[in-house]
Length: 175
Image (cartoon, rainbow, N blue to C red; front, side):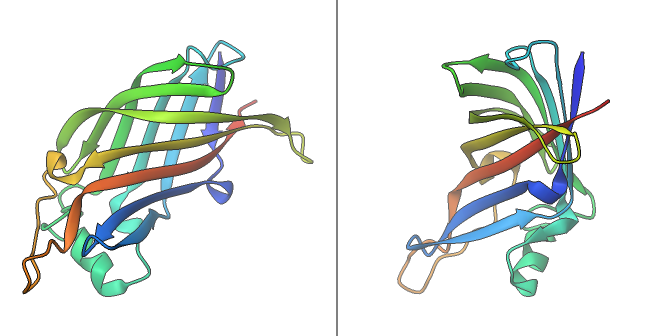
């Protein structure tokens, strides 16, 4: 069984949400952990677990970050982590996979499907075996109890319900 741990220095966990339905606000989590276990060289039997520290959320705006950590959104005090546990990792082509699993945010768990592009495996200059993945998908924030909403004076929606997920992940094979 090969076990891989995430290389946080070479990974990004980002999300985008439409603001006023005309532009995206991008955010990320700066503290996270992930493990991948696989017997198969092509990862076709991989089991993946991921956790992010909600208090590490950053959108380059302290006031907005504080609002996201509040009960209007993540409720970070009561729910300090969001987690994902895979239920399947299915190879669709040479470098494309479907990742299905249970995402838990704010105490609510829903099954989601993400698209994964396998970037390859290399040995770095330090002799570490690394595997790279680009992971994309979308969720509806209201499915997870992140229900805060507001409308502009003109009746426009301030924050969209759809959240786009984009993860650039390097995994390090453990000795």
